Length: 374
Image 1 (cartoon, rainbow, N blue to C red):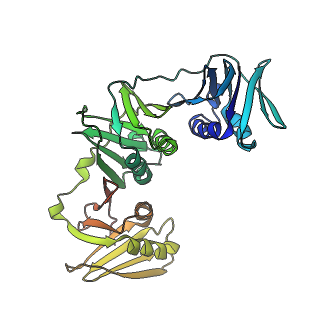
Image 2: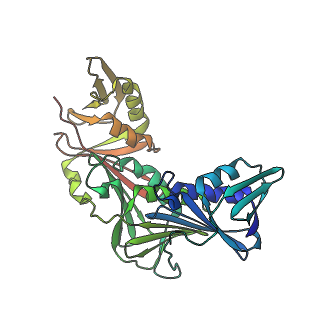
Image 3: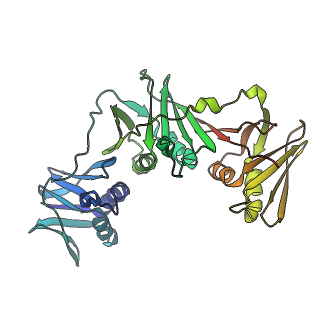
């Protein structure tokens, strides 16, 4: 095997591959990546058995061949080399790398014995996803993916629901729930279905979208318990989480039973920022008092220190008071970059508050459970 390729083209794909492979796997092969030179294309593969990525890119190939190398080591070497074309070849089962006056010889496995990554025929039975909005959705709703060790592995991922040519993407950590809804671009009617993506796959999908060309379509195909996403010459494969997601619709309350407010995002961000210094492991409750023309927010730490922040509010209803976890509230407002959000609140403090906004054609709804007021 012998080929030459531009560093910029190669390092872009290696950064994606390195997000997939296991860095410290007890199975050595899962720390490696697969490289195949054939014809005019260089094929790269990486997998941890649950998630896999395959890439095809153009290269100047003098001799076909296959090699398996440490993904991390290969990436780190290519990363530090000067810009421009780099030449690679196999000699006595060692991968040789040459760029100008720099030369490397790294241990390699010269065979085809790499875990099989399933493939998919994207010429039929596909769903066209809106690339830009999906990337925004992942960046936004990821804050509600569960990170705790719990039995419900389904909450450690994102729920995809396709219904009437719309897609709902839902995440939850049992304290908050995030729903993003948008219309699909294709005119053909698609099958109503749903599945759960692991958090790793969800975030790697965003990376793949970010590296895609503007002209690349984002396609999705499903084969049983396997899901596939294609953008240009890249295909992301994942095994689906084999569990049921929570009945997220059961957490919604009839809007007529809730009090509606229009909140300035900048005001809430300022409140959180100014009260954050008092928050700690045992002092996370931020109390909001809603009165005609004002929001008064306060937080008391475990030592009794108190912070109070007042902001204007366009509200003419009755006074009420609610408490929320400042960390969960902060995680939401950190990803909101619109001027205002609609807030639908249960003034009794028994049901979750709903925060709604629309961005780039996507409707978002964030639910957060209230805390008990003492």
